[in-house]
Length: 442
Image 1 (cartoon, rainbow, N blue to C red):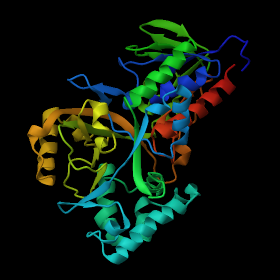
Image 2 (cartoon, rainbow, N blue to C red):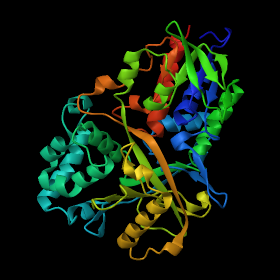
Image 3 (cartoon, rainbow, N blue to C red):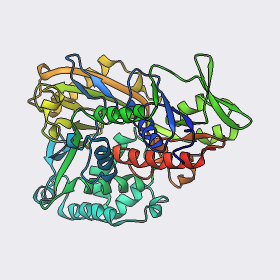
């Protein structure tokens, strides 16, 4: 776009990490953006949480890997690369009421849940996934079939099946092998250097540091943020998006880019074609109930505890202060205890007190040295639409960036496939969408 021309004016719906990233890359292309966010803070799932003592932490858990090159490049552009920190981490498995470390070849070869043949096949499974480049070949293979073919039925029964059941709230039968492939490939990138030890990173100040830096650049380029400003409707005339309805008033824009999940997006486009609504209805999501437990000491010392006990109410244990220096989060130790659910699950309806009591009882059984007196804060967070689901042979159901409505664009996590949704993939997607929008603008 010619820098001397009048900048195009684009409305971005949603001030989550996707919306702010998209706004940043559009602003770099001489596009004037206005970002509308219903909540009082930016970030969405990557947004901050202020604890009762004033400490600011991430509301949900995140990790940055040394292989996250696009995110590192963005941090350098924003002048916050010096806020990145990386530390060694450790992973474990909870199996039959015992915790097993899984961080080196010796621990792997002595892993009690599996015999030596199954351990070999488990290692072969990981290596096989990391060698696959043509992920499309996995689209028509179920995750169960692929894991059993490579790792055998015992490994699947003892390790993979309980974790898949927990992740998918019971139903994983229609899940393609791309699900496990993307995770095993990313797992490899946690190991770096000559020692090949597992490492994870973070920004001092959490993702709020990244959000604030991008927001500052957007405002310097003439962009505007509207917090506490829910959009009522995307206005469509003659098959073209012309602006927004906000508080009953009309705001006109050259284009509109929505960054929310499909079910929320649909509410804002009542006049979009009926067949487009029917298409978006096919996009399914997992929700989450994710307590943040703030402790006065470490819980396990492991970054991740993979739970194979199907009776556990939570999917896993993520102790982010195993790699985040507690001094950067108010001297606290942060433990996230996610339970992935179907959006309408009964888990979403349980009270905070019910969740807290059930979770704490299980932690007391898992960790004999854990005491409730160690808990400084226990806050339950819920979201109905967190992780988009992709079924077997459903690549064609991924919504396109350009919608059937002219000048209406969609940038959403359902389009990030088969990559995992994280800071790296959102950065890449936000930049790609910005380029496509800038090119398509009238």
